[in-house]
Image (cartoon, rainbow over all chains, first blue to last red; front, top):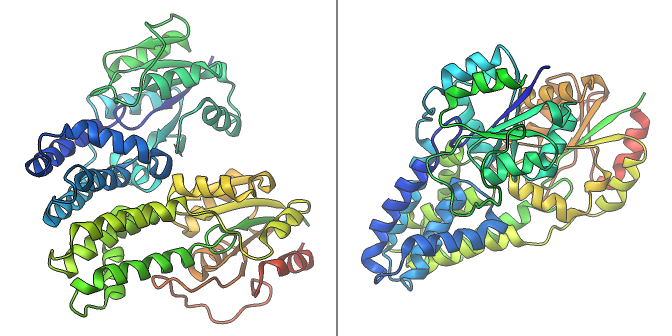
Length: 231
Length: 231
């Protein structure tokens, strides 16, 4: 049997949360002097949650939420120079070099010789395309799908368009909700490779790996042997 | 012969520039008191141009560029309350009702009975999907392609994926560069329906309509009879 392998982008192929964490730390140290002991991380997360419906995911959304939070929690006392630094921090995130996770470059190249590979990544279209172009991975991918949400219906639409049966599809990613549960839901299989940290907005009802439906790996480089045992 | 008709979104199916213009006016009146006579429209456009490489198109990019410009042109003298109002202005743009252009609802419904329709729209993935969902037009569209740029290669990729020969394809849109020139370039045909205003970043070398390759219409509702004469 031949497999179609779906690969998540952020924190599966390349570092992402690490950069958000570093920027959040910078946000905290810039805003704290004017915030009178407010828990800035919680406030920022609350703003992000509230804005998700309007903004969607991505660095530009995050930057706008940092600015909104800085003004809100300081009651407008934050200096405008700090706002300028937050805009600059967002731009530095967008301009940051794409850093592949350990083993990804060689492993993706080797998988490409064996299976059909589809990148299925969530977030800002422009920034995801930019990261992909700089990743060097594009020549190994058969299809690229950049989506605004990873719901079961998203995967169903992508597999329909590619004429792939869900039973031939294995999704690989760091998010239990977006990469594992949503794919099991439509009858596919999945491999969970935990990332830099679980994102605070994501939780999962699934407990431990269920042989035959989903697996958990510690490193991306373990993927070829797992897939070989399935295909 | 049967035609595949590509439809642009912003300022072809629904109002867009009008909302940007109104927000820019608000930006000017908010920032002018602190900007000492600077030409704020030119400064904003310059910031947008400079940021395009990092930000791409869309409301979130525009909002961040408004904030950056407000800080820059006032030498940091703009009050932080104004920044808060700019963030709010961006959110109001994202939350603004989708207003279809005159005749679009009926015309798209009637075209859908005759031709294959593909929405091909440039911009922020999340916001375009949100606008499309609220437009009521989705049931009439055979495919939806949200792209970060409309280059000839973009159209070639979309037509390849849909197995459509460029000679059967007619693109309809308000941008000479993105909707007309790029499509003529790959051997397709195009209909230009000028929008609310030509966007300052876009210019065209093409002069007047060239019968047999591209046409210009004053209103969207004139489309069915033109297409009927081609198909």
